[in-house]
Structure formats: C-alpha cells, structure tokens
Image 1 (cartoon, rainbow, N blue to C red):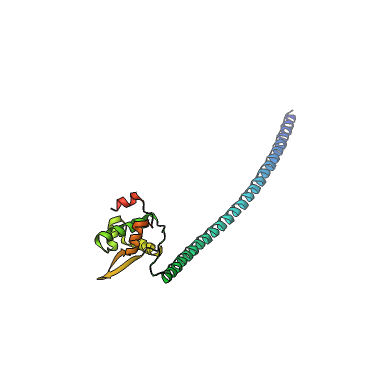
Image 2: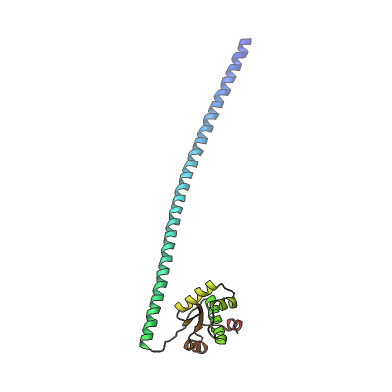
Length: 191
C-alpha cells in the first residue's frame, strides 16, 4: 500500500511538472514575441530619429545659407546706394536726399545729434551717449549706420577729439520734409 501511494504521488508530480513546462513554454513564446515586437518598434524609432536628425541638419544648413544670402544682399544694397549717391553727386552739384528708413535707436541718435548740434554746435560721441543713455561705442556704431544710410554726418577733429554735426542742407530738408520720419512723440523727448 505504501508503494501505491508513492506511485500516485509520483504521477501527480509528473502531471504538475508537465503542466508547468507547458505554461513555461507558452510564457517564453509570448515574451519572445513581445521582445521581437519591441525590437522592431525600437528599430522604427531609430530610423525616425535618424531621419529627424538628418532633416534638422539640412534645415540648419539651409538657414545658414539664407543668412549668408541676406548678408550678401545687404552688401549689394549698400554698394548700389553708394553708386547711386556718387552718380547723383556727379550729375548734380547739390545732393538729392530721399526718405531714409532708420531704426528706433538710430532715430534717437539722429535726434540727439540734430537737436544738440543745433543748440551747441558740433558735439562729441560722449555728449550724445550721455543724452540718450547708450555707451560711446554704441553711439559710434549708430553714427556709422546713419552715414551708411545716407545721412551726411560731418566729423571734425579738434585736439584729437571728434566733433559731429549734420550737414546744413540736410538739416533744412529734414525740417521741411521729415526725411527720417520722426514722429511727434519722439521729437518731444529731444526738445
């Protein structure tokens, strides 16, 4: 009798282990299938990431080329403006002034130069910088911009100091025709 009990126990044990082996195989197949799907998905993500990176690099390259083209266009515009100005000077003894577009800061520098030079005569970069609250370096840069855009700023050197003023004919034209498009609110700040 004891032998029969052991034999039954062994059979039950064998049935349980077969069932566990079947479950184990099924789970391994399921996990392998999930692993394959994840690897396939990861491959797709990597492909998309590579494509996105390539597109980003391409766009950066295009953006850089557009910036270079803009610089070249600005250089050409300045060159053409200089040629037109020289041509005008050759044909007419008196220069012809057209409307000039200035940024807000350039207008502030222009107005400081325009109003202060009218009151005191030629003024320095330092005086302009104090008046509008910019550094002397920034004022110098804006004065260069004004000259490049066609505003006749005249420089005089006295005792190694630079004094600036605007050509008289341009001052009169500005007063009559507002060539640099100064609005009333801005002009009131400099009066």
